Length: 122
Image (cartoon, rainbow, N blue to C red):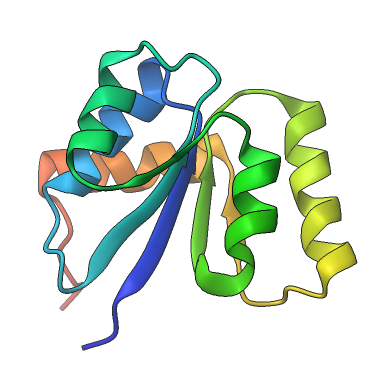
């Protein structure tokens, strides 16, 4: 089974709930390798650090540092400028592997995980 390496940018209200939901997913299939959040005193940052997840204050630094080690980057900051800059970093580095997932898609995934309604159509 293939494992997906995940990073999360933004651990505020939405990001912290998303982190919690992903931590409940099998580590064999999904591994959170890094988080980025400027407010280091948040409970979600503490939880990430306790779980051995790499912590960055800035999502740009996280993406530059980990490059294509990240399969999926959930961008949950709500910052349109940051989102644009992350895409520019991917473009400038030639990283065609990492996918940046915006908040609406992350919310959909989170809803499916939390509600347990991930069923295949018959």
